[in-house]
Length: 261
Image 1: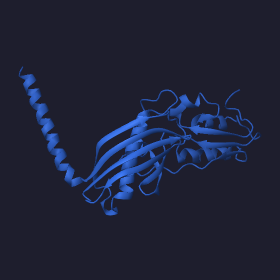
Image 2: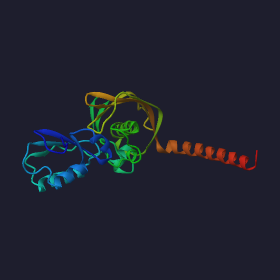
Image 3: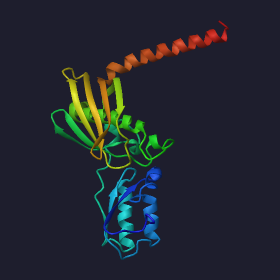
Image 4: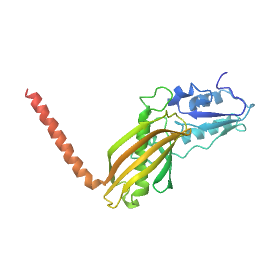
């Protein structure tokens, strides 16, 4: 059966074009571009059973608005229902990125003392997808980066005084990720548990935490991280001195090689 033909009362999951390898293997998964093409070509027609459209990864709120408009224009809004799109990713300042497409965290909230949850939102043009996407699953480096962004965002929002936000330099002391199940380009949740918080000195905040990524009732990965947030003024001088030492050492080695030592 052609997977694009409407069936009796079903749900279609819509993903970004980067995840075509996943959509091509599953009858109820379509890329946003394929679905728009099918709608505009009249494939679904006006008659047929009700279809729910559920957003997966790689689909933005703007994509969803465009899909709404096309569904209305081709006359199938009475039977093709779009589920709500998840909240847009956090601001780039909270996750320490410059491009919005590289933010992976959305709908961050506190769910208990030292416990926080967020939705994983992967933009179709995320930097980690541009040159590496094989098979059906999401690559592991996306999980690692999502964990990094999660501890940044939680710290900035919940542990830093508002007037000090954006004024910290984060240093990872250790970070270990265990991959337990494949992560696919579908809805996923991130759970963050603070296991130690040393926040007595506002110039130096130190934490350990566990960060789990969950999907379809399973934990896909667990990251254990220890990190410190220093006031920028405290760490910039040390960083500069160590960078200067490394440059001097490298220059000396270059001079010795050039001299034939």
